[in-house]
Amino acid sequence: MSVTHAPQTADVLTRQDPELAEILLGELHRQSSTLQLIAAENFCSPAVLAALGSALANKYAEGYPGARHHGGCEIVDVAERLAVDRAKSLFGAEHANVQSHSGSSAVLAAYAALLRPGDTVLALGLPYGGHLTHGSPANFSGRWFDFVGYGVDAETGLIDHDQVRTLARTHRPKAIVCGSIAYPRHIDYAFFREVADEVGAYLIADAAHPIGLVAGGAAPSPVPYADVVCATTHKVLRGPRGGMILCGGDLAERVDRAVFPFTQGGAQMHTIAAKAVAFGEAATPAFAAYAHQVVANARVLAAALADEGLVVTTGGTDTHLVTADPAPLGVDGRTARGRLAAAGLVLDCCALPHADTRGLRLGTAAVTTQGMAEKEMERIAALLAGVVRGEVESVRAREEVRDLVGGFPPYPA
Ligand SMILES: Cc1ncc(COP(=O)(O)O)c(C=O)c1O
Image (cartoon, helix red, strand yellow):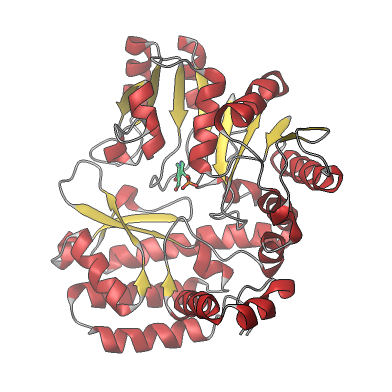
């Protein structure tokens, strides 16, 4: 098995640094021998990994193509222009900035482009699935801005649109953020645009999670509605770990300056090249089929978990994400996650709206990349419930996980 899947480096690493090579192989083994159900993760392609492990990692490139602070950027300029052009074409955006090092960096830059410290921002509250960058006191966002949180309806788990409108009218925010780490339903971007226009606010869509579904035509796009769209490139989109920002031409210069030099230094050219590869892959019919299968799988997984007795938030999903309360099976989310981890099912806990205990957050991006389909989702749900209930002990569960994933290797051996 190759250590990195980047052909030019794999063998060298094994020879030169067997200690580190063993760690990489161990992680590859962990990823391919357990079930990857973390909603924020995926398996990027060998081509993406090859770009990440390329000579572009050596290059310093502060600035933007054609206007760099370093010499020797003529080749990486082509790579960045390609990534930008592919992102614009994939998402139908007038402008794309592909330099953000992560989703959080993209959000930071969006705020820097549009806001001043002390401005009021309306965003989904953290207990309902808002991200740390949406006003957590532990994050720059909560320290530098005055965040007001909207929530979800206690009965349906759906975003409380009446509350959004009322809070917007009361607080007159400078920006409204829509986007979540755990909301399993489509976001009504037209509604948020309407409210933002009514109160004179910018609309920032943090589409870190659904952007890959958007690329594949399996979820509505925020691009026609939001002033600025922030995203990650490594979730359903299946690219390298990183971020990007899409916006209209009118905000292009402000966004670019907010990324560099305001919040970041030199661009990571190997990651930008890998983003270009991922955007190219995401523009193919095969990726569109993948994105739709991700959603089909999540729907089956949600329904099967509900059949097993878990309480699925909002009663289902429109996306790759499923959140569920295992309490009816006799344990809280933290205990359930521990049992599942011991059994080889890797997933996250998450806050449950209007509940004191935590729930489980699952995603189907990675298992779908592996080629799993509806049948496997039913098998996963049954196994998960058996483990959580304590009916299937971890050794037997691990055997079943190995049997399940054995037929779906994420990378060729
Ligand atoms: C909605 C949302 N915004 C921002 C981020 C931050 O992305 P990163 O971890 O790349 O900083 C995430 C990550 O999961 C997210 O879900």
